[in-house]
Image 1 (cartoon, helix red, strand yellow):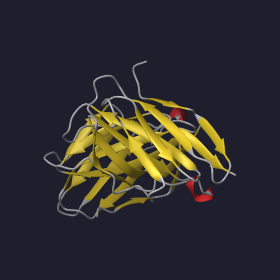
Image 2 (cartoon, chains in turn cyan, red):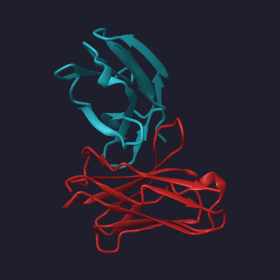
Image 3 (cartoon, each protein chain N blue to C red):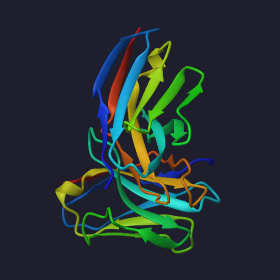
Length: 112
Length: 114
């Protein structure tokens, strides 16, 4: 089955700096890669996603890049704000299947 | 409401008791998913419904876990003869298609087994 690895497990940045979270996946048939933000006591909230026919996608301060050859994908948050502090999960879904495999999460702390 | 609704938010049970967790998906969403999230970990897939049909239950940890969605809307996850290792947050998600579409999560039920 699919295996998703995520690094780093914790990340502290100064407000205004950028944050980068990296993930790798094992199943070459995976073609959909969502990113979720989870705040304490809440469910995961979708913040951005990318499909395998696209190499990069951007939404305001958030961008995701995908390298299908290397099976890498990354989340980039620019101009970080304290409200960006949360746990972020990458995930992968195989084409034709509905099962999403999550990474182990990155706890992001933005220091004011 | 507009989002996925789960109840109860918190459940405490004694070891050996049966529990039932409810999920009310976003109206019109065809697909419904259950996940288990242990402390400090990512959600792990349990089972998936397309309408009332349970198409994948490969993630259910044992035969003590049972899920149903009889009318293709509300779903219930039942755990029989609970064990301490069942303590976790149980998340429900729904999506509006049977192809790869974003899954929208509820806030989960935190289950504690004493």
